[in-house]
Length: 303
Image (cartoon, rainbow, N blue to C red):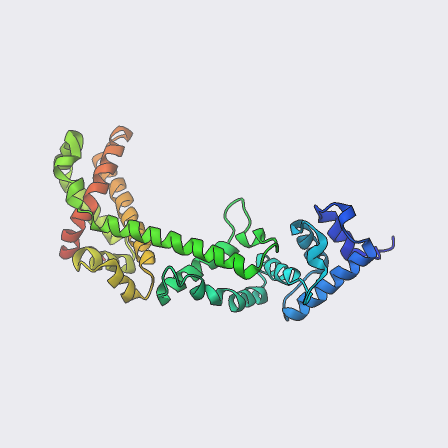
């Protein structure tokens, strides 16, 4: 069987959602696609570009053939940007580096109206990189959603701004939580059931919490000491570790969760309580952890 005289057009047409009548005839379409492939390879030297796969990728995203045609001032940039997006989707190292060089380097300018600090910009850039190029279960990386209908730079700018605003909201929530007094969740407001548990299980709680702290990594234990014992602010800890405040907030939240889960497990195992009491004990653990950490960290924990 002889090969198709228009392989690129065939790949395009097989994947295209455009009405056939709106497309050039196959020979003309083949020439346009071959030109787009050549321009993409020249524009992104070193990028591995499978021509038929690229044509199918473009076809899936085009609503008309206009992006393949000449426009005033030259050819449309859409195929070039789609070639880069496809390379990034396939984790091509050259494509990922070119994306960094041409788009992620501008993140600071994109989010300057939100926060221009180097740590914040670095955090947004890293989160953006993860969001665009890392797949979540059952889904493709977000870069697959770029259609070429608008400029890739503008598309990245919108994504960066969305991440920056979400980070700021997270910061505000973290600050508010850090300023709340732990006493408000302790003592009088525990209620009679938890008050009884606190009195009955105080010694077991302390031992379980001390053991849970001993299971933390050196970094997480240090973070706990800085925050609970030295009373450093999240900003101060972020500056010490040269990361953004939201990163420190996440580290501390994960460490607290680890301590609370390990403390609950150990406490239930030692006391031999059933499932009926486990939820109450877990609630008590969460309410007591922050209040007890300062004393235990001052005393020292197992290494």
